[in-house]
Image: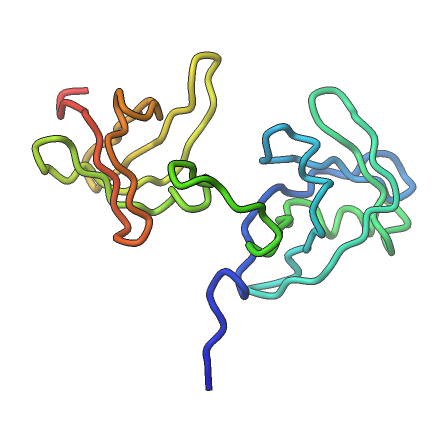
Length: 174
């Protein structure tokens, strides 16, 4: 019997549910996509327990401040909205468009083991964030954390998803 691919079982996290907004079941939505409204172009799944995901229907969505508020199906009041606060929103990997050979989704980068140009292991990619100039990967081992600009050909030399590795030009002192 064939095992399903992990990508088909574990959704990629693309956002989360924030605090209730008002008394009629609306919630704040935190998007992790770029641009942020891309979140609503996918068939979303809602985390409903450990490794348990359910389809979620969004009845309405509106921009609100720097994010969004949404009315979700079957969430009718503030108490129900409070029960789903902090739950994750996911998308099946198969819903993402194919990328060119030199492009990667952040979900693919997380967990890669990072080596510098001298072959020294710096740690694993544990997070990332965006600055005005470029994206930054957070690489951590048991003793040190490195904030490395994600700039291909300048700092990021090679990304090998199949091997689970990334090579960077980075001095141990940074």
